[in-house]
Image (cartoon, rainbow, N blue to C red; front, side):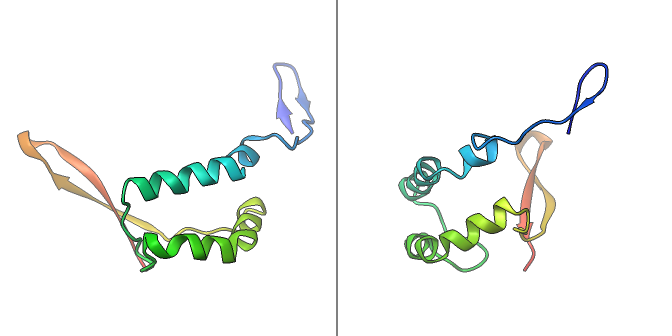
Length: 97
């Protein structure tokens, strides 16, 4: 349902929505290649970048469906402030297991 200036209207969901664009194979492959080229480090789950491709290939359908259905849950992130030069601070996210 959408909101216009005068009343509520129903909006049909299309197959070309933002979520579909984000989850497109082209975008997901681009994201994976970016992590790989940046020599990204493993996450808090202990899964290394070298193991990521096999995991994604084996769990792709399950992961995509949980995201599409709104069932995917990320780990909670605790924020702490880290001091920087000049008295400034930056936020650091720490994922709780």
